[in-house]
Length: 511
Image (cartoon, rainbow, N blue to C red; front, side, top):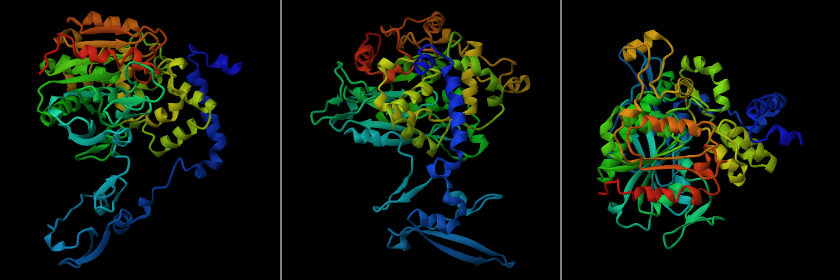
């Protein structure tokens, strides 16, 4: 009785109550934390250069080199045991910088040298393993942005398609604290021998898992990972433990990430146009790009905005109530935010231990988004928790909260006039002007019970757009929330069938 009353669907206090419960439980369990292996000791801390090399499957040689003035330098050579004739190798010397050592070059990621001589890193495949487990093939592409971030973008390969030149490329961009898996984990299923995507326990006209639905219906599907999430933690100059690595907001994703991914896909596919589906923050990114660089209207056809959130002034999420307390703190830090590492997998396993555990984890995860238990697949709770949150920067979080409180899609506010003036020549950050967008290939898909993106904010967005929409679709079930558009039990009935129809609208120029 108490449980039902506490967690009724419209109770926003669930977030606070559950947070206090988790805090008290954490204190109670503190003596046994080490045995749970949630927080682990990284053995690389105790290893020297040769030991790190050998722990990865290579061999190492330590050489002592004496300089002309008597100093003895330790230089370590990496030996690839799969190479039998070393005379054909080209020697290369890697020299670290000030206050560093040789480990600088070999500690970015955990990994191993495989039996067939390949270097494979942990947690670097993104969604590729999931894609291949369903019968498709996958390609991981590393795309370097103009400011040096290396994004992992995964391409779904349908092995039944022999002529890929006829496929229409489409980029799927996840939202805040998500990753590319967002589009492919709704349901279990498989690619059949006759090239159909079939899901378990799904009677809808198409599948619930949008990435695979598109891959069997004539689309060349590319799954993006935004900078700073668990699969895009690399940079050409900085490491993810450097504070400067985390010095980015949504602006950099608009200015650098989207143009880099779009250009790369154009070159790979030899197609001038591509389609784009964004969810939540993924919609802000494209709206911002179309507003600031209008020529992309000729490239992105269509742009499908799921839960479009350029305006969030009517949000009823607890984030609105409590976010103001941490906004200033987020602006003054340059750190990862909700990047949980190995602990996230343990939490995901705990969330799958019982039905009660699944309900509690669901309530915590959806406490800022809106509840709808009838459409939530509780058997997938652990999978969802393993991918949400996926990490980002503290500035990204601050930027979203800024947009909520200002109810304007504007560039990042650094919180002081001096920095804003230096950056923008104004005390106020400039606005992404929605009225400047000239694309007539925009479709909106949204739901009524979305605490982050209520219908009045969608209407406010439409009032700022001076173009005819390709489609304007509110899910007919008034209980659907922010994530239901992707993870509901009936997306294959209410959302996914509509997307191919949008692609065939007469407004789109088909190459």
